Length: 125
Image (cartoon, rainbow, N blue to C red; front, side, top):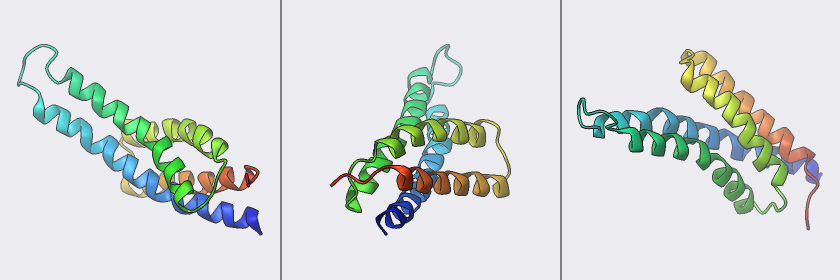
């Protein structure tokens, strides 16, 4: 029973985390471009780097905090492999500018993968 609950919780946490990180990863570079001094060499470089780092590093925090809020401990597998999966899936979706349908499928794939990773992780009491 607990494996099923962890799987559901992992899916419920991974789905919104993917949407939030996707939104951040797509909107923060626009912010960086808008804050750059028009045309100066290196302008917006710091903002662009900040946007990339925030877009990638938010995922482990959201996965960990979401599972903790749902009462699950020992989410190392979900957090570590979820970050790797997000780096691959999220980068493909954002950098390759796939269509809306493909984006929804990739974000759903990430949510299901998060559920599987949470279900495989042994529960810590």
